[in-house]
Image (cartoon, rainbow over all chains, first blue to last red; front, side):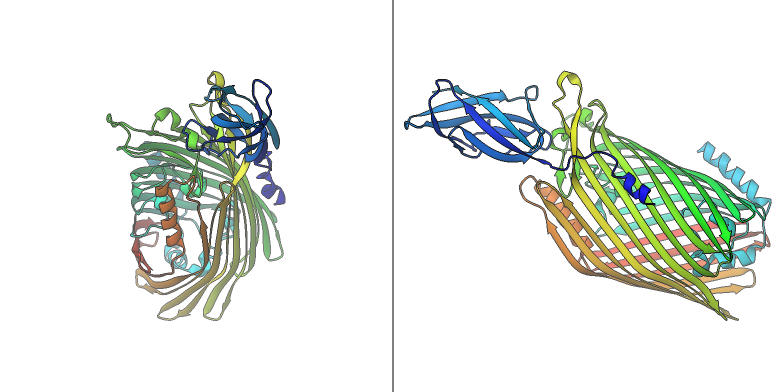
Length: 122
Length: 503
């Protein structure tokens, strides 16, 4: 009887549904970054799970790093962000590395690091 | 339909060979105490049952009209016509065969938020839209079993098959075809005045499903792939028919152990467990499974059937537990046209518990038999969804009583009963976030929740008349109706009318 009940558990199931993601900015020029913010109102900005449709807001980058927790899955990642350097100057940057269904990023481990090689727009 | 008729006539002709005293058997079939002696699921225990060979062939009309539907996913009304033939043939004192054929055809009205068949088996993983509409349905069911005794041992083999076709001919147009096959084997041993019976079963389930839109000006709604408590699989929603072809593939096993007396009267107990898993696959996306549902059940009951002078009774204490766990797949981006399942994790769970006490008492008098059947039970349902977190919980207490009278008069049998019941909601909780929930879907869940957390009362009436046309042949008419009174939400009506020949 217990075997019958236990039979329903035979398929391996991932226990932890969440992934702790570290986003690390990479800018040309090597200047020290103080912070970066991504405008959540801009429609092209996305950190989107392609299966569930959940679009996560970007937290503020402190230095060139930010951390966020998302559901494990396959993601489209793209944004325009305002970078402030340590010397007080600022630039607008763009990341389009994972911006379409044919170019996505899998976040399937408990912890993942994503390198964001941005281009400077102005 | 032709095969159905051929099989039906085969069953009728086999049963006619061994017709026995119909009058006493038909009286006994009205007894709810004796009905309590039937052992669910076993394909051999009926060898020990009180019934001699019989055949019942009937036409049944069944309907419901719900102002506040219990499950809007099954519509707010239904009209079904059913042809039902069942037979038990005792080949000799040591062996018997049993068979049944059932064909039903009808319409479910205003089915909403569900385009799949067998909603209660598959929820929460159904396809759904806000428009819905009437669903035509046609279902065939066949079952057969053979059982025999060898000394103190008994064994039995049986199988049953169900085929269902449901469809709608206006947009959105679901077309679902279900094949549901199960096979069972039973074996047991008689010790003293009791019998121990073990039954194992295997079930295979397949449902092919597609939803089409024919309107040239565009789809009038969006089809969703529901994943539980208002969440849905975003990636494949829409009205593109290539995203709306799916297949459910399930299989499972069950096991039951029963102990019951050789005669009708005495102690009986049953313990049963089942495990059933269903994958829901996207047919046009490499057949990738995007959800899995694992359903496990455990049920136990213990009771006693006894008699004391003119009084006979059955008392039964029971408990049922169902645990559902749903997992969702992470599907890759489908590079190269091939879709792969990268991993899957548990997102949905639901547990329902029911426990109660039911009984039947019959007092035989020279002028007829009085019957009373009270029951009371506690129900609790809890389900939650992992992320974004959602929760639904409710519990209630239910009680009912049915009182009736059975009269054997000349060549007639009459029985009638009235029933009353109530459901008292005890506790409830609903948590569905506004974020990531489409407002119409949230409204639908709130309506469903309100229905299941409402107090209600019920009243029912059943009348039965049977004319013995000869010692071997009778004609029966059975009519019953029931009304649910929901506070502030309108009434729901249910009725059944059947005409049967029995021999």
